[in-house]
Amino acid sequence: MRRVLNRSTGLLLMALLAVLSAPAMRADQATARKQPPPPPAKAAQHVMVTPDQVKWGPAPPGLPSGGQMAVLDGDPGKAGLFTARLKMPDGYKIPPHWHPTDEHVIVISGTLKAGGGDKWDDGSMHSLTAGSYANMRRKQSHYVAAQGETILQIVAMGPFAITYVNAQDDPRKKSSSN
Image (cartoon, rainbow, N blue to C red; front, side, top):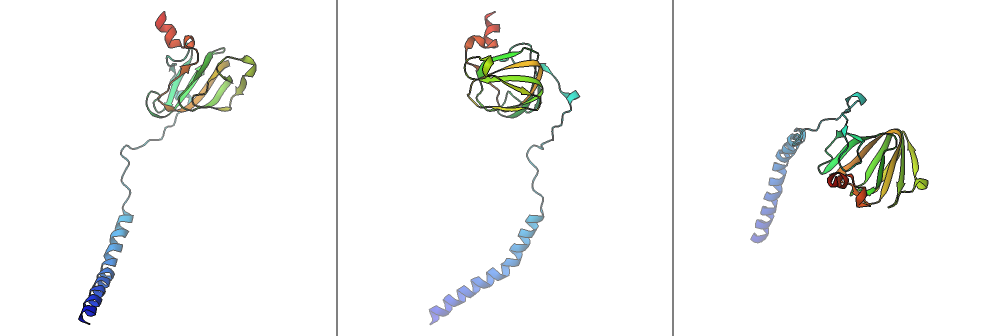
């Protein structure tokens, strides 16, 4: 009988402690909920760019000469998402090539002629006018040409890389052999 009383007394004491400490725990939880979340390690800023603020420069060496590029957000040379614009003069062509990541392309102005595959084929190219969208899938060969001055917006994961199907088409190899 004494054993039962001790056990019952112990259970009763545990229950009493739980009841008495519950308001304190609830108060701590309420205080914690009222605290604002800690700020992010690096405060993110909105990126807003108007057309007159776009800063054009030469396209990267992996693209044929004559094109211009403007980076709107991110860094194409580093891992992570970036947004850039490519301005191509009329007749500008990028021979069959592929990228290690998907390339999301929006035609801002002009007409982009785009085809898929390892060999250039004018007859299979699609005409994408201003407002058109294309997703050039990773590691799938494609080629493009500008009809009239054409501006593209490209969203992709960096680092940006381009591999030409035919090594002799790579402008980086042409400039190093001259």
